[in-house]
Length: 371
Ligand code: ASP
Image (tube, rainbow, N blue to C red; front, side):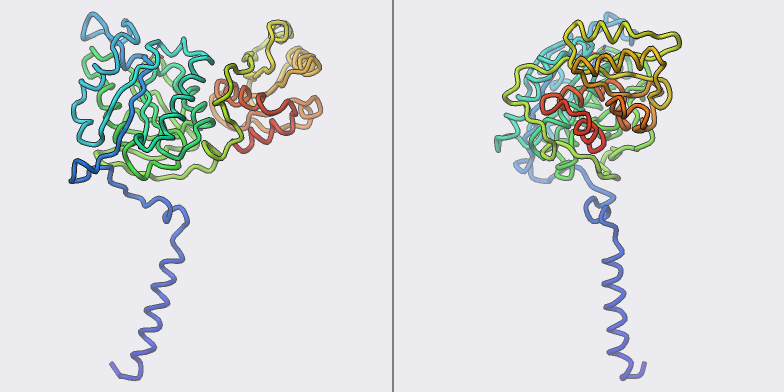
């Protein structure tokens, strides 16, 4: 090569180099596609992960190994859960705490507040690097979304459960617990909001939902996709665009009660009387699980309008299981808000928290659009 071309070639090479750096998407910069989980060579470098146990099938026991549906949920304690997976000690220093030991169908606002306060307190301390919560799967997504909106830390919080009791052949609890601890111990799990780990998938609490009554692959993030996957290592693939944890308006540390919000299902031949019953029983908000795009029969709309006149907030969600409920002028004029892509049970969680701040439908709509 002629000597006079050399500076030019060096210049072009430098340009290509810079261009390659600039063309990298912000997502690629923030979350490198392949992220090995915490597996430091030095044992002392392991993070401290606290396991808060609340019960569920993961702590369930049945009289026979072949029984996957007839069992007692919340039968074994947190120490037994940890002892069943000694391998977790290779990825983190773990300690356990029993918050409650119940089937998650019995999870209520009081326990939810207790759990969220405990998580916030633990995460304030330098002694806790991440938290795993074991939970029944039936209402797991509600607790996870509540934490996603109320935890004031960017340290990892991971919720895990199982579909088969601890005594079953092919119990999924041990691997889900191991993966959850591994995720909570991973530095790159920070700042992603509350995560849900089951069946080798890492999902955002905002998007994941239980889709099947008994199958092990019941938790799905349809439409929006998973945050990551686990195949020995941890692979984070997506970033969260919704506001969560430190970026929400909600602080629960001084709350000892949440406003009552009820869910009313929409169906052919429905009426207004369930709205009246909710108002009478002291509800401050109602989620309407409507057919399709949150549509309402004339009778349901009449009930909703009456509820709004009595001072309640009414949010239209959908019973379809997927999609966005769009604001619609016909309903907006009646001050009814739309749940965006939140299913009814998660819309209830957000409306309870929204009502601790405002009753203004416009502000409530903004929360639904952003969270
Ligand atoms: N009924 C149980 C519960 O939610 C089901 C489960 O954990 O899979 O606690």
